[in-house]
Length: 135
Ligand code: NI
Image (cartoon, rainbow, N blue to C red; front, side, top):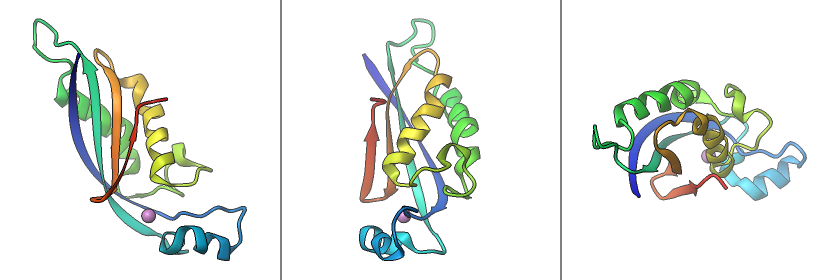
């Protein structure tokens, strides 16, 4: 089995806020990420597809096509958007990187043909990232 990864970037705003909690509880749990007036991140997303290379192309999946799918299905809907307000698939979810990566997987996975989606790694900052394998 071979694994191929495409790296994409986008920018988005969010806040971490549990509406069932008081302002004080939110600030205690989320610190500056609970800031009322939002804040932004430069996200980096690694999309890994697994499979065996096609004998005719040598590819598991054409990475240019993969990039186009990721752009249409995810980036066009999240780049320069507010995750809490603008992104339909994050509606009513706490906009943590953990919840975000799971929601991205759910949107993207049905569109990956040929190879199989194996992993999405989502960096919220250069030093914080989450991995999701769809389970
Ligand atoms: Ni944040």
